[in-house]
Length: 362
Image (cartoon, helix red, strand yellow):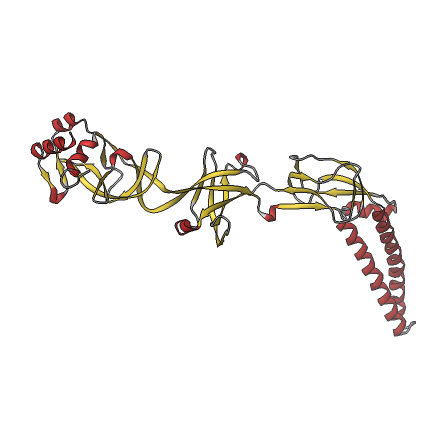
């Protein structure tokens, strides 16, 4: 049937093979059921599909620990809670904290005495009342106590005690064994490693918190296809209105599955994905040349090359194109074509039969 149709077209249509032109009248077009449609311009090419995992940048993740051993007596947050920087997560009763406060108050008193002596001896030295040796000893003594004061104050800050609480301690001399465990960043509580009544050691990890304003996609690409992927390529998550941009191409191959790590930063729809989530992604590549999306039925294959039937005044020009990719029932192409062109999208099988019948056994 296909050969008969080709013979009919060869006889009834003036076909100029040298110019790759199929000449058809309006009546012939209607008889063949040929319909035309527009070229749809697109910006990117579908490259490949791949699995990926949502991850958190290391700089946005933090393990909250305690600087002193003690007993956990209050917990204020649960997994999933949103927290602001400085938010108190838990309270720990720590005898070590009492000892540190006592040391600090001692350094406060020592510094106060040393400062008074420093001011007094400074005046006496200017008046020539005391010797150089005594003035030197007074200065050294003052610097030593000042260093001790700064040391104990910094240790209290490291312990998680706020500046206002330290100032209150220095004024009132009222000590407390309750150690506040606060978050150093704003974000979300991802994990809690303690329970009320539990005794914890110094530097023990208590909470895992993270700022989710920035998320990454860790994509596994087969090493034989890594050369096709480039920095700046777009990543689309299947079934999720989320897009990302590739910013890193791994330099090593995973020995177990022979894949290369490609990392993308999520740009839109961050609220639709969660850390640890496994997703399927599509990598798309922006083209520097005009590219178009056409129905698969609009493409003709002949001697290993692809063609479109572009409408013109006398019929259709058989125009070679380059296939860049496919998605669902569409083909992404480029070539010597323009967005204003009309192409055969329905009834194109008759035109294909005409063209392929000139030398193809398809």
